[in-house]
Each structure stands twice: as C-alpha cells, then as structure tokens.
Length: 506
Image (spheres, rainbow, N blue to C red):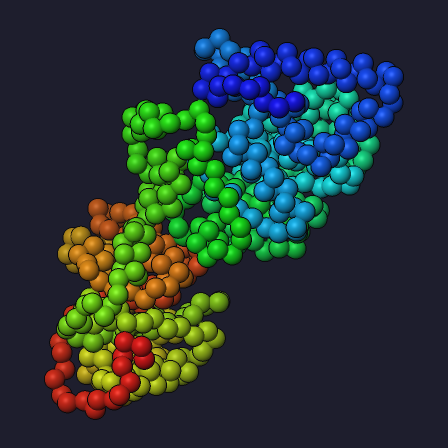
C-alpha cells in the first residue's frame, strides 16, 4: 500500500490511512480463504521489502496528538529520508558492516530501529537483535514509551494477527529486556550501561544515544566480539567521545537524519524551537547536529582548533622564543609527546609509546639536536616519572630546561592551578589568532576534550585521571602543545649552529 497520494505530513489524514489498511486486510483475508498461499506469498514479499512492511502495518505513538483531537496511536509512515535510513541499515546488516546514524531529535530514529528489529524478528529464523543504552530505564521500563522495549511490544501487538507468530503471547514471550518469536526462536534482547555487549552474540546491535555512554571503551571492546553489524545512533555530545571520533575519522559509514529532512518541519518550526528552548547548547545538540557547540562545559571549542589547523603556517612569521614542551607518559597506553612552537606557529607535535624515561630523554635530545637551532625553552612535565626525563635534560641544557608541575597552585585569584592557567593561555592564543596548528584529527579531538569547572571561584580544567574515569583518551599531544604556554622564556642570544633542515618540518 503506497502512502496516499497528496498525503500532508504537516496535517496528516490518518483516517484515510486506517481505511486503506482495513480494506487491504479484508482483501488479504478474503484471498486467504480460497488461496492458502496468499499470506505466505505476502510474507515472502515483506521479507525482502522492510520499507513496505513498516509502511503497510507499522504503528507508532505520539501523545502530542491528544490536545489537538487526533489519535495518539497512529500509522507509522516513513517519509523519504526515513525510508532511506531503513534501506541503509538493512544494507549494512546484509553486508556485515558497522555504521553510525547521527540525528536531530524527534526524527523517529528509535522507531525506525524498532521497525527494523521487528521485521527481522518476524521474517528471519534465529535472528538475534540487540539493543543497548546507557541506562536500563531507557531500554525497558513498564508502561514508559520513552524506553525501547515498550515500543517493540506495542509494534508487535498492533500488527494484524496474520503477521504475529503463531502462539505469540506478550505476557509469556515478551518479559523484561527480551522478546522471543515462539515459532522461529528469533529474539530481541536488551542491555544497559557497562553490560552492553556482554550477552549473547547478535545478528545486529543498536546502541542508542551512543555519544552519551558513560564508559564507551568498555562497550567498544564488548561489541567487537559480539556482532558483525553494530549501529550507533545518537545526537552529538561534543567532540571528545568515540561516537564523534568515528564521525570525523570516517572509519564507519554515517547517515544523517537532520530536522530539515522532515517534510513537516521548516524554518518557521526551527525558529519556534529556538524561541521555546532558549539554550544554544541544547539547540546545537538536539537540532543542529553541531558537535563543536553541543558540550556545555567544553573548554576549547572545535571551531577555534579547526581554524588554526586550516591556516597555512607559511603565511605567518614566527616570532619570539622557540619553545618545546615534553609531556611524559605516566601509565597504561599513554604516549610521551613533544611539541614545538614559536609565537603564532606550532610547527609539529610528535609522540612515542612504551618508552622508559631514559629513552624519552634520549628521544628529546635527538629531536632538539636535529633542529636548525636549539629551543630557547624546553618545558618538561615533572609529575611522576617525568622527573627522570627532566633531570637528564637539565644536566645537558641547564639554562634551557624548566620543570612544569601542572597541579602547582597559581596565586592570582583566577586560576585554581597551573594546568588551568596553561589551558587558558592556549585558548586565548587560539582566540586571538591568526595562529597555526598541525592538521591532525587526533590533536583536534584532544584539544577539545577537557571540560572545565570552577573551584573556590577559580577556573579548573579536569585532570587526566578525571578524563580517564569517563574513558576519554589522555590528551598527551594537546598537553604538550599547552605546556609551551607554561612559563615565559627569554630569547637566548648565543650563536647556534644553523642546519639545512627546516624546523617547520623537522
């Protein structure tokens, strides 16, 4: 049954859709009396045509219709972009690929996934469809249609009996976090929080609001062994999370469901939403799919970093002291990083993994001696194992090497510690522009990752340990760049040997 010609998405006539469905169902039942193959043939057709199945028989809920006198239980009709989304997800599943779907809110993304899940549950024997979200109440909560499983049960219960599995009883076959097809054994399962991906293997797995997972690295590890097709769907939540990293790295296919794709929404609707919400962060997150503006306590916004990375450094004249900073790895998979900056140009950032302090010190010496001139200042992070690197470098260049303790208090009434002051100085450098940073996606992600707060009315930037608790990668490269702002440096005027190699690319 095609969507009625002339159907208005802004003022939908559901009565005509209900009448068309009733008439079609009467024909199907009449045909089935004389032709036993009529319904099996129709099911075979739907097995290959999920969009048709959802458009013909899917139902959804919109409680906002109550106040305008329209039914709250309505036909689930897919507008063109939603149809594209269904076909795209099914294509990923058939091709055993992962994908991500970024969305504005109220685009029906959850209902799309529910429709796909029920379609697979009905027509593919033994299929296992997984759903996960950061909180259990978002996955299954009795009577709450904001959760996923009440939607799934509703969708199944409102199908014509010809399409429900023989013997299906929602009280028996749809307990908490699970819906089982009694005929084929196909199952829809739910998980929440750190348990996402811990259960049985699945044919496809939907991770709802993936950008908001509390410990996304655990989910990444679990699902890598659980399914051949994982679909992350979410509104954005800043740039420092795996969902955003996947988006900008281009590692997996991405489909966008933007509010402008909705045939019932226009510029007047958007302006009305902005008037009612009156919060630019929520507008950026929920409507505009703006990763850079969608985090309320992100200290450095992505547009500042992007501008610095797109600027051709050759257009700037580097002036002032040549400053190097060394961020020394302290634990786990962190890397030791060094950055080189003069004035408005950060020439490069380099990193190494699994070096001990002796190796890190030798690496820094090698890099310094390969430059056309020695840095006027070499700032070394001396917290933890960094002290050993500092000691060796200080013995070699006593007048150039300085120690940086990021937790050191700053007695100016503005910053809680030196870390806050360094990050503030780096942000002011970016804001005052034009400046140049190496074009590096990892560096951009790290520069925009730290969050800020205030303690005793002083600016505080979250520590690496705090970032680790929310499973955000340690910003080693970014910290190296930021440390070039730790302390002032006077230009050392002694003559140094000039080499042919240019420190812009050294």
